[in-house]
Length: 195
Image (cartoon, rainbow, N blue to C red):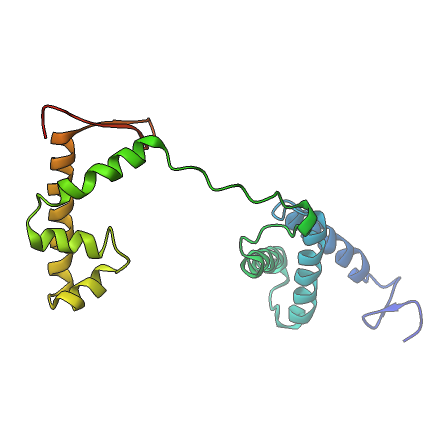
């Protein structure tokens, strides 16, 4: 094969490899560039797709299916790229990171509500109070609390839900609660007449 040969045919004998390969590469690059954000990543993905096309060219049986096959391989390369990269953020140099925020002070409303919970919790029947103290106010999961008390997990879940409802009723009866549009506590005050 001399310098003018391509695929065993001379350039003059209707050899389309160079022009077809250039068109295919341009199409793949364009396709990938429209689906991958960063240009440097798009070039890597396009190269991966072109390599797959080259390696699999012998398996293509129908030349009419070349375009569909080419785009299917390019799409797979894009999907693989996103699978590999996940949703990882761009790397940031340590000096570019913002300084850690100081812990915010507990809002006054939260502190006031927390102060009135113990007497309200005392009004709830013992089984439900124990369930809330172990899970919501303690550090156990509902399953761990169930094991500790020797009851089923579903039994513990029921106690926690009923206990929360009972505590919510007591809080509503004894405290005036204000929430913002997002549901966050903005104000809490004991009602002098109710409790």
